[in-house]
Length: 269
Image (cartoon, rainbow, N blue to C red; front, side):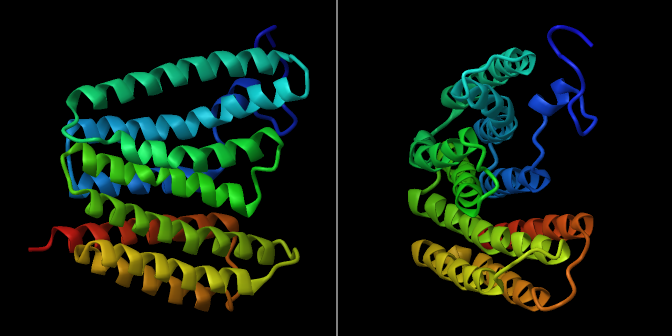
């Protein structure tokens, strides 16, 4: 134990790991999916920088949250100091990646970032109040970070309508899957749940995907993928829930499948 790191936290993780590594395992995939989708349809060095920036932003959220929570509670613990140092380093890396994108981009990639800021702010507001596990902040943060797909397209000089449509597909994936995963976890843990919320989310996701096709018909394959995903999740919600690890693996496969189908459809002649 050192003055900076303090003792291990209750669950056995060191303070450094606790303040530096996100505990939301599904968040890794939901952050990487829009970056991958954007790079598949519009590969560029500026896109790589933006994709990396999205991942760094996701990781930096954890130390920022700890630092702000402790400040709001008027306390300064060893973990507070450590969280501030980690956050400063990661935010510096984030700024550097955005600067690289700005230098190498061929379009106004910053527009989706500005649009996404209120959504990220909503998530952060709940984070600071230790309410980040609620549905609203999870949806807001995931949809907000999904804007990186649109930013990557615009950075490569892509059409704004196509960029917005791609973001809609990413948002539809989040709207369909986050309530479903929450439902399955509650069912597995024998906690109270409302299946109707998950079922309704599948319908909303399809409507959002229809909006993507209205913006750009090349995203029709993405609409089909979202529709099939919704049907599968409605069916799965009535089957015995899997263990958390298997549920996570299923979501990784589902997300990558949506990304690949959407990209192949968008790139088809």
